[in-house]
Length: 235
Image 1 (cartoon, rainbow, N blue to C red):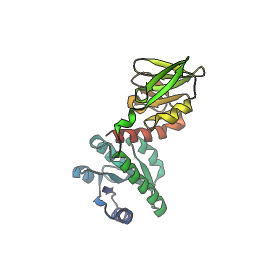
Image 2: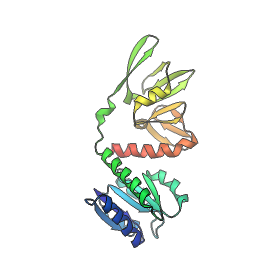
Image 3: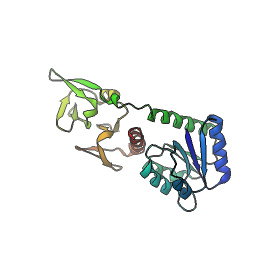
């Protein structure tokens, strides 16, 4: 497991490094004092602890450049000011830690990141070949779940949109959501979208290869976080 710690404060770098090695003595830990130094190293990184406020290239700028080369790195921001944290969603951050660093919180976030790392490398595309049987006016229709671009609720029906057809049936969106799996997200109570077909998004709308879906403002941070995880799983 390759761990990188990028912080312009030596004592913080050493503090995090000691905590990492206490949890996972077998980890290889590399230390960087600036964003520039990290990017020049061009080293494969599994988990990165990245300070937001650094002289020169700050943490957000560093993360954006890193993402161009490596979408799988799990980024955990380290900051003294929580007000910067919301920006972390834009670069697909896994979580953040606020200084001064609490042992319990660090352990929780780091262990979750390790679990996420394991999940990234045990992902199997075959899981997408699942099917759903729906009853449409007495006719049973087999739908490949991965072929669903998005679903919406309309006139008490669930409407499934595929790239080349639309299927309606009486049912509950919550039931479809339960079987769809982690590649899907419900940005609004009336919509369920497949991350595979997302082309662009903002805080109010998700634009898909076919159609659009409404985004509830309160669901936007969670959407971005899970979409970035999806991208990491797919590499």
